[in-house]
Length: 405
Image (cartoon, rainbow, N blue to C red; front, side):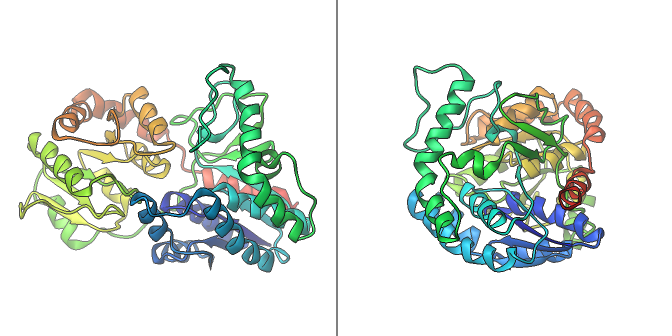
């Protein structure tokens, strides 16, 4: 069996696919993962035993350009994605038995169209619940498309969201569909995402309430097991004193990285703690030569998070799942999209604190860390950690196999 998995985005979009790929490979499937050509993504997929199909430009370049305000316009970006992913998908889709896509909407739309063209079973997966139609939540606004002020009913807002998606994506997606011999659609959201979706999140951390707006199968998060040892110098730092605080913002280009680094370092020092500072895509750096700050690049978070006193992060879905599963308290400093949701969930579960807004200061982060470092928070985090499921990728792999039965 040959399976195509597809996404475009940051590490938080690609690593779950690597987790699913690893479980499919273990079931003797041949897995091709269409993803940006970044070296770290190639490494992830190599660990999973999957073939990497590099598509489009590196995601790190795209994210950093958007962070600087120099990225392409939305319509230009949609066109670029369709132009790059269309030929890539049609090249490999004909030999595939199933396609699973997640991430940016134009990527999922291209994958769905390729699956439809070749009569291949297709599934759309969400890595967070906030984009799924539900009577319990409102859709996301988009630049130039604020939610209408005169509509309060969530069902009406999701109908409005259909029209919004058609206005933004209908033209370019239908042009691609017609180019490969498919009829156009007047409901590009439902055609692309389908009304039967997979939700790759943990039901404790991210409970989903059934809704009549679509059918959702919650699998649990798709985790790629990480057996890599921590670097020897990091091990030595960890062993040299009390557990430090970890600080990292993953693949998010935080506003004013120098000021953010100063705020987090000074707030950790205010609690008389050492810290492990992850450079990440924001390129955070130490503010002085203090021996209490150890700077790392990409490391095994699954191993590291169990060794620290608290975890300060941006609230990406993957990082939040890993942090919660570690049993270590956390502080979420949300930046974009679904990250405020994960911050709220951390606070609601009492396993940490959510920072008010994306820009930390010494004072605000010191206060949030006080909550995370409190004994009652540590106890609660330790209680919740073991309840987080680890079999989500295995559940999803079985769903893929069922698609082709």
